Length: 86
Image: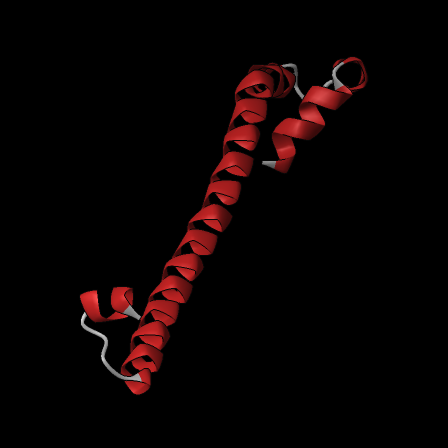
């Protein structure tokens, strides 16, 4: 009881009111953290795709310069397919 009074809480209804406010603030912060975590996941996925594109872009450029040669395509199918997806 002494601790409650030290924190300016003299009645039960004050305790309920303060605990509701703290809970609301906690939930608001938790929702912000979840939104940030979701965005970080999206950014991580984008970084992965950018890296894949960077690694395969040159192969696709060479494929186009080859006049879309079928033999070139077959020997570089994986890289060409990855570069087209992005």
